[in-house]
Length: 261
Ligand SMILES: Nc1ncnc2c1ncn2[C@@H]1O[C@H](COP(=O)(O)OP(=O)(O)OP(=O)(O)O)[C@@H](O)[C@H]1O
Ligand SMILES: [Mg+2]
Image (cartoon, rainbow, N blue to C red; front, side):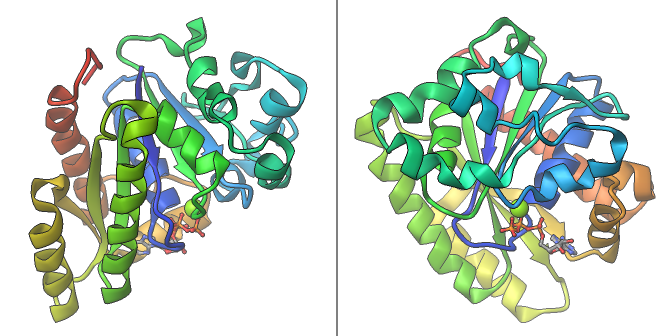
């Protein structure tokens, strides 16, 4: 399965929004989709709270009780699967330390048969903290997708993310493939084009061409527990998400190793 970690150390940049809607885009293309909520705030899990999932069967049970990840997979009404998050996930750093075994544990767990579908995709929605949880997702991923909201402060956080991911190269003995996704873009604002220009100057073609524009429908749908294709399948936001999906198809083809596009 293709594994994508969605992560930015800056909060509120649209990481969960991107995870949910990108998952839905893969699902529309008949790709098996698993979402891992890796944020103790459980925002993604909350989206599905009223769909009969059991929030106690969360990722922390794998770490705390050794429950295999496959047993934590919960089917969602729309055909995708979710491993929920739980507030206890916050204690991962203190309970298990930051040793290499802890950091690789998720990566090893994702080698189980349930995660081997060649056309499948695992999307990991990370919390905005560079701790064990997010690092575990990065270690387990084929690609890190970094949502960057179109404001000036976001450029600093993108630079920090770049440094943090580069620091992992000697540990992983490979560079961490990454792409930056501009989010909350607004054509009417000069700030959007200035942020885009600066991001492209700094990170070149690691900055995706597709962007997620500021759209009320994206915020509304998240609040209503829906992805954008359930909420407004014909709208501009849904088109933005599909453009991102198609661009990622090309990105994945360029990744080292045999990963399903
Ligand atoms: N493109 C967008 N257009 C409009 N609203 C958006 C967009 N992206 C995100 N939002 C809104 O911004 C808020 C934060 O988004 P989201 O929860 O996806 O960010 P996050 O990076 O996951 O935040 P956190 O760091 O808290 O996990 C939400 O209310 C969401 O609806
Ligand atoms: Mg989030």
